[in-house]
Image (cartoon, rainbow, N blue to C red; front, side):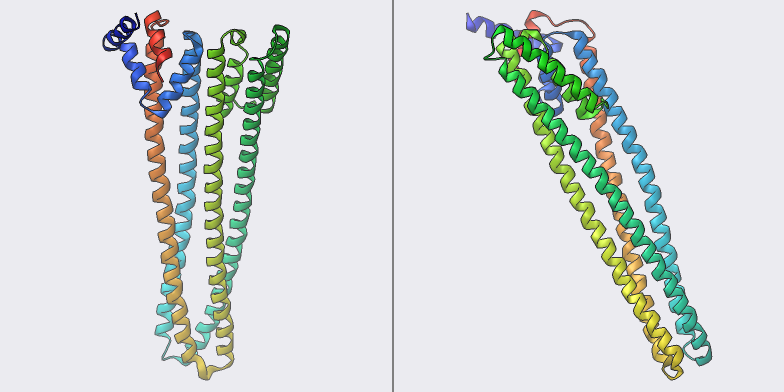
Length: 360
């Protein structure tokens, strides 16, 4: 008898496009997520389609948000590059002026005064930039802390939901009714705390909604699937938490490097300003002062060239990352579109449903 059933399933696998599609879903992580949700819904076409449409909305929203972010980011980076170019052009010009003034002692004195003012202004710009970077970093820390708190809240909601669901196994009929009421209350509190239904908020809310299905008390297999969905979501959230922590660490490292570079530049500028002032008082050392200033400008050129290269690398990496994520989201939307098309044709046949429930 078992052999006959197996032969039927194998035959259907080669003959049924839906079964072929289910096999396709099982070949990717995102497809497995869709597949698990379909398995939990147990042929409820309407809920499967709702789930698909919500994911489509979420993915499109994430793409729009990422696009807007990249546009703004490119604008910022272009501004920083322009500032570096301006500073680079200014440093080159100053260096050329200093070299031209070497034979002229009188002009050297006037030029040194101008350089002192220029470097003081540049130092002030660096201080302003440090203040701007610090404010920007504080905002990014605030956003990270808020997101981390949200993830902790989502994990707590999942753990509480899992705890309540597992109590259904051993509870009496009366106790089970109370547990379902507790799950419903827990779900309502979750919605109140996380009204935004995008991304993981939607997935957690959906898992808690699935946990309110009264058939779970008599179907241990379905109950275990709901628990598995919750555990998988929790694992995904832990991974997201780790990724965001690493990203924040990278932002902190970049911030510290930028501040250190500006402080070093200011230290160099302070030395140059003091040195120029000393040369104004000691005209006999004007030649030496001009040579030192030429060296300072040469270092400034190197610094600004490196700074520009750094921003160009950041822009290239972020654009590359955007392209990869855009491609990934397109693949996800294509897969969701295929899933929607499959389920728009109506409920699964008993054979298709049986194959689906046996698919890992």
